[in-house]
Structure formats: C-alpha cells, structure tokens
Length: 456
Image: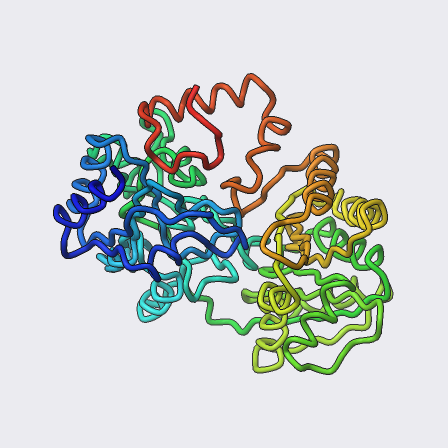
C-alpha cells in the first residue's frame, strides 16, 4: 500500500515530488536532535498556494498525514516526519509579495527566510523584529507556526506581536484568511492568534502579512559584564528591568555554557565560574541608558565594558548566537525552553543547580534574561536521550510550573514536550484544546502526534 500511494503521489505531483533517500532521511529530523525511525512517503515542495491546496485535498481523500515543514530549525521536533506521512515543504514558497513603507508592513509567502525579509525591508528604511538565533535559515511561516522568539524579545516581543494576518490552507484544502491588513481589527474571534504557535496542527500557513518597524538611525550601545556567580548576574538583570529599562537585548550565559562557547569559537577563556551578561540599548537615549545599565551591573559586582556598535559589539552577540553549535560540538543536545516570571529567574537558576546535583548532570544554560526565558541544555552521547536526562528535564519543567512559568517560551511543544502538556494546562483546558484541534482537522491528518497524542 505505501509503495502504491507513493507512486500515485509522484504521478499526481511529478514536478514537486521528491522521494530520494537523502531527502526523505533529511525530513526525519530537525534541529531538536530527535529523529524518526522510518522514512516518510515523500517530500513535496509546492510552488504556489494552489499546489498546497491540491496536496492537502489529495491527503484528505486518501487519509494521509501531512507534516508542514519550513526551515527545519525547530527545537521541539515539530517538523519531523514519520512513516506514511507526506511532508509539505514551504521552501519554494519564497516570494516577498509586497513591502509598504506607508503601512509599515510586508506580505510574504511562508518560505521567506527571516534575513531575506530584513534585507529587503532595510531598503525601505524598515525591519522585521523577530530575531531567532536561526534567522539566517528559519522561515517566516515557521516563526509564526511556533511563535518564535529570539534575542530582541526583551523589547520587541515574540513573533505574535508582528503578525497582522495569515493565509491558511485548512485540512479540507480550502484557503482562508485570518486577520486584517489594518493595524486595528476586532471582528469576530482572533483566529490569527490561534494559528500563531499552532505548530501545523490546525492548518498550513502559506502567506502572512507582518508588521515592520522603522529602522532606528541612532547607534546602539552594548554593555557586557562578567559576574563571579549566577546569583549576582540574575540580580543585576532583574534590577535592569525593575528600574524601568527596556534594553533591546538582555542575555545571560551561565558558567557552564560560557567555557563551551569560548572553546568552540576559539576565543580566550574567561576565569572558571564566570557568568556573562550582555545588554544592548537602542534609540535616541541609547548612550544614557547604556551608562545607567553599566552602573546597575557594577553595583552587583559585575566587571563591565560599554561600547558603541561595531565589531566588538557584534562579537558579543555572535558569542551568544553560537550557543547551539557549541553544545552540538560536545555531543547530542536536548535544548529546553522554560520561561518564568522575571522575578523568579534567580530561583529558577537555583532549581537548575539542584537538578544538576539530584540527577548527576551538568546543564549549560543561556537565558533571554529580559523576559525570563531560559534555555537549559542537556548534552548526551548516543542516538537516544537517556532516561535520567528525561527525568531531569521533567524535574526542570515542574520547577518552572511551580514558579508560575511554562514548559516552553518560544520553541513549542512538538514531539518533545507533549507528555508534560497536561501538567501545565490542566484537564479542562487540555481537553478544550484537543476539541479545537478536531474542529479544524476532524480526520486528524495535520501534523499528527505533535503537541497532542491523538484526536478526542
């Protein structure tokens, strides 16, 4: 049966089907470190929205699961394909359809790369705020599907703050538009926000109209500070926020992660136990804000440096963005993504240290300290995540929930976190969300097994 369906797929979509072994193998994994044990039926790369609709109608007619896939930069296993599934890649849906300086927006197809959109917007004096570390290969559609974050979240928010409307192919192949081109609009239920972060379980996002911001002509200033312990660094970050600052970047690299990153990049090593905090300010008051943040860091015993934009400032951000490849250089990586209220970040770091002790593991961690989103990393050897690592991750998640936080701040649930989803949502909300999934996808063909195990 799978062979005949595969042949029918290729026959029906000959120009956009790929069933080569290398392509199917690639579709079995994403950046989460997880891998499917068997190959999907095919990877289809539609060039038009109409082709997406035709593929979904074919899948609905034959009860075939459909896995939407963007740049595969996801860290929760949301775009991994398994046996019997069709992958719908948005890679060929890569056109920027409009950039409007007057309306400060862009309309793009789902496969447009973040950096590509930003380069095009820059010519109009504009920019696209979502800034995930994978921005050089992550797609706008994938950002929306996972509600991706990034280094600029502290001031400019995650992807949801930048989306005006989405065009979505539903499970029956129909095309709908949710949202408005206008800045304001409250007609009916807000289905745009329902689609943001839905991880391909409610529909396939094929186009989006997103907000652009005016490019700031003022130079940015970057403040770095070295602290001797995680408590001092956490207190300093909390003070920056509580004293009324909104830095565009506020990142923390703990003493477990920093030496691995420095070793990976070949930069001079910091003293053992060093925690690095990076803040960046923008706008007309950038120099004054940078000075005040420098004083806050110094008050917590941070050894500070302050500098305007330039190579040194970029090198600091490059250090932070090198986190994932640095971890990968030391083994397989399970990257977690808990978020807590800003006031509880210090306590969350304490919980992480306790989990390290309880489970005999080391957990290198970086944090978007401006919004309380932490990325604890578990490095292991072999193709399977060891059971004690999963146990440690479970303890991590429950600690975040106890502190008023969440399992995932920006990576999504995907395959990796669905076993803990009910713990956060509670039975009533968990069942309500599954029923919403069933309304959009009654046959359960859209990204099955992701987020929820099965249909109600």
